[in-house]
Every structure is written in C-alpha cells, then in structure tokens.
Image (cartoon, rainbow, N blue to C red; front, top):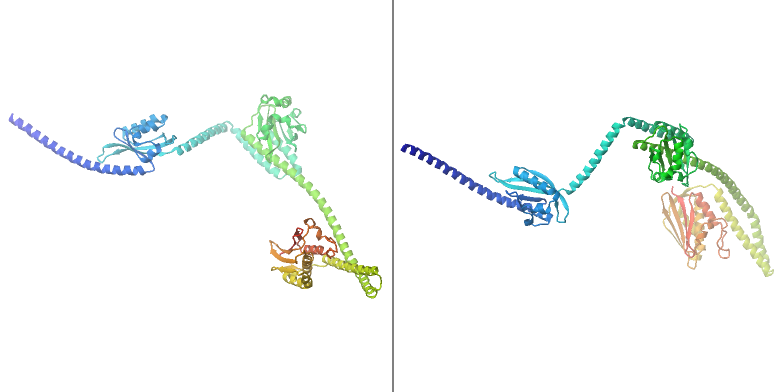
Length: 615
C-alpha cells in the first residue's frame, strides 16, 4: 500500500510540475500579449488620429457588435455627435427606414462569420438629404490572433447610384426596344425583305430624279407613284400640292389601278377645309394613316362617303415638306384589304415624298431660271441695241462738237479781231450805248472762245487714243501749281500735297484733271483764303486721290449734277466758267478705269475723290 501511495505522489508531483511550467508559459505569453496590446493601442490611437483627418467616413465596433468610434468626417457628414452615433444610434437616427433592417442583418451576419462585407444604404446627411453610401467592413484581430471587432469605411455613392438608375432605365428601355425589335423582325422577316427592296427602289428613284430635266419631272413622279403603290399593295396613289396662298389643294400627279378616282378628290383647287380633320397633324409634319374608314372623325364625313363609294378600305397621308412649310400631301389607298403601314414603310415613303418635293422645287426653279434667262436675253438684246445706238449717238455728238467747235474758231476769231479794231478806232467817238454794245460783243466772243476751247478738250478726251505711261502725280501737281502761280498768289491760296504715287496714266490728262479740281478749289472760296490739301491712299487694288478745299461747299443734292456738261450752280456774274470742267474730269477718270465723286455740305468746303487702278 505504501508503494501505491508513493506512486500516486510521484504522479501528482509530475502533474504539478507540468501545470507549473504551463502556467509559467501562459504568464509569459500574457506578458508578451500585454506588450503587443500596448503597441496595438498606440498604433490604434495613431490610426484614429489619422482617421479623423481622412476624407472618408470611418467607423469601428467592438466585440459586442456595437459601434464605438466614428471619425470626424463621419460626424461632419451626419451633423451628430460621437455620443449620438455610438452603439446603434447612427443607424436608428440616420439610416433610411427601408434600408435599416437589411443593413443590420448584413452587418451582424458578417460579424458572426468574421468575414469582410460590403453593403449599400441611404444615410441622412446633416442637411436632411438622403445620401447613398457604400460601406465596407473588415474584422479586426489582435497580435495573438484574437478577434477585436470590426473596422470599416463609407463612401458617398449618390451620384453613382443616380447614374446607375439612369443607366438601368436606359438599359431597360434598350432591352425592351431590342425585345420589341427582335419580335418585330421575327414576325415580319418577309416585310424586312420588302422594305429593303423598297429602300433600293427609292435609291434608284433618287438617282433617276437627279438626272431628270424640268420637263421630265411630272412624268417621272407619275411613274414613281405607280411603282411605289404597286409595291406597297396600294390601289391608288396621288400627290396634292398646296397653293401659294395656302387656301387650296390641287391633285397634280396620280396613279389609279381600280378606278377609285370617282370617289377621291380629283378636282383642282380643293379648299383646305376638305382636309380640316387632318390639317393640324400634317402641318406638324406627321404622317396620318387610317387602317379603317370607321376611324375617321365626323369632320371627314364628306371624304369618308367618297372613299366608301370607291371601296377604299384604308389609306395613308404623308406630308410634303419644303423649307419647314407644308408643301402638299402624298396619299396611298388600298381597296381589296385593309392595311397598316409600318413605321419603316412610312419613313421610307417620307423619303419618297422628299424626293418628289426636291424634284418639283427643282422643276419650278429651272422654269423660273428659264423664264428669267429668256427675259434677260431680251433685256440684253435691247440693252445692246440701246448701247449701240448710244455709242453711235455719242460718236456723232462728239464728231459734231469737234467739227462745230473747230469750224467756229475762225469766224469767232474774225468777230473778236474786228470788234477789237472797232473798239480801238471808234470807242469814245460814239455814244455811250455804242461803247456798251462793243464791250458786250468782246465779252461774248471771249466767253464763246472759252466754251469752244473746253468743248474741243471734252471731245478730244473721248476721241483721242489713251496712251498710258508711268506718271508721277507729285510732278504733275508741281507743274499745275506752276501754271496757276499767278492765280494762287492773287487769291493768297495755300496748297499742300502729301506723298503722291506714280500711276499708269496719261500725263497730259492727269494735269488737266488736277488743274480743274485745284482751280475750282481756288475759284469757289469763301471769305477765308483758299486752303487746298491733296492726298493719296492705297486701297486693295486702286489708288484713292482726294482734293480737299475750305470753300463755299456744294448742296449734296447737286453732287451728281455738277459732273454733267454745261451744268452750273452759279451765274457767270458770280463765278466765271463754261460748266464743262467737271464733265471733262469725269471723262478723264472713267477713261482711266476709275470713278469720281464729291462729298460736301454748303459752307463746309468740298472733297473731290477720284480713283485710279493700281498697276
């Protein structure tokens, strides 16, 4: 027995030793865990500090599944305090009622399984707006592997949810459209082939109408109406055009296979009231199909009666559109059976309607062009005849002016010479009245001589050959000023010229032109001494020359008249002259390919402009 007790004592001693060693190991492990936990707590505090500054919503929960922490971004989002959010306060106060139960079930199920989870729910923001969040949670484990709770983050996905909603709606619509389209394609495979053939037919029609002349359009439309009607199993097709005043319709093109025309509006100039039941839709460019005449409204009773007499079962009206306005109506009618035109058929028939409208517009345009060309040809012929007559008249007039003025020179010189001799020998020996008559004769002879000289100059400008050469306008102005030096000095005139160009012109005619303009500027001065400025400006393809003065000015209504021959605005007693100078200026400028005009107001001086080609 003592041996048995001794054995048991040894066993107990050994067991105690093992327990002691095991206890020591456990104590050491706990000490190590405590150190690790301290490090984890330090790390956790660091993570929490970082979480508060993170731009995402972060939360943590403990072993009891209750939520213990929310970062500052979360609190700012909800507008609530940490105390209000802890536990399940965040869910009870903020989660949408419809999401609340599912949200907690997802969380607790994942929590019990210690697995990662994701869920979406609506959370009320501080401004009371419900925002969609994507919440992701992961289990937390200590260094020794023991479970410590969950940590997670939330991202606002409201915009994504709205986009997904729109996308789902689009996908649903697309799926529905695909299903409907698939069903339609399966149910109407033969119709698809017919539509393809119709499409090809319309392409051929389009190419055909492109090559049709205006006088072939009507026949082309009638043939096309027959082809399309036969292909669409229509007994009749017709085209109505709206009058220019929009008051009546007229059937201008048609095709008929079953003599239904007796009941259809074949008449011309039908009042628009005939289509009053459909006009509003047609004006909105909508096609109207009536699969059964019973569907017609009461306002269409007149049309319905006519169609029934002709055994029409159904019909389709396509609006003809030109420039966003209702141009007319394209109609198709069935007799033997009712028909429902598909959207694809209507779309293709609208293309046919566009082809017809373009062809009719082109026909109308070509007719207008042809009429305009014919009228233009007549006008051109008349104009050419008038120009030829005018040229002959001008040449005859110029020849007459030259010959007349030339032939008048000698008699005029004799009158002037003998009158001067008479004055020298007898003036003072006769009575005063005779002396006055002699003075009138001399003055008249001088004026006539000046007029003849200017008339000869005007005639030569028109008849002489224009010989151009490089001409320095600055040198021409200097020559003119030298010739006018006495007049300039007498009137105390001040003249200035900017840098003037060298142009291709006749030097003699340029001198005559500038002398006339400068002389007029000096002659028609006001109380102040004359001031004349000559300038030049290069434009795109021409030189613009201006001669500005400070004289008495010109009434704008006479701005064109003054360039006519023998046109004067003042009496000879006021200002000397023949009234030909500016007419000569215009003739010179026009001969050089330019034009001349004046800008002026009474009392404000005048600016004479003329252009010369830049060569």
